[in-house]
Length: 154
Image (spheres, one colour):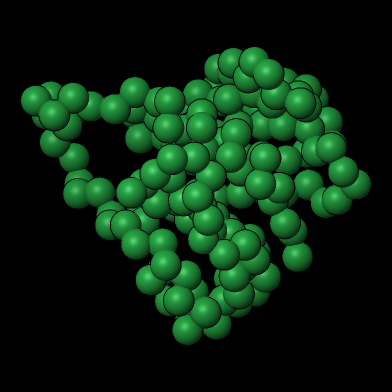
């Protein structure tokens, strides 16, 4: 089981929250409707952040920005999010544990979704808790043991 540290999750969420949002009077492009619980962020925890970042920026042409104040190597990654891609982050793990990719899913009622996770055979790794004013996170494993995160803005 892979556990994401609260600091890492909080940093990733803070970066995601800082992303620009469409103004209320600005129309979104006419595209297929957004699913009710979209994936909004991803992060790669690796043993060699600089090497992994170089690989992905070279192969896919993604752009990255270092995160000021991070306690480890951490870069946000622009994959062309406005064009349909999902932006994320790459960081170097600070503890000896397996490398991982985490997916963050935006939900409306994190408590109810956590209950559904358990009812559907998943397991709560970290119960819903507030990581910044009005923003909640919950880490969970699907039935096969893969760790995901839910985010809720209240």
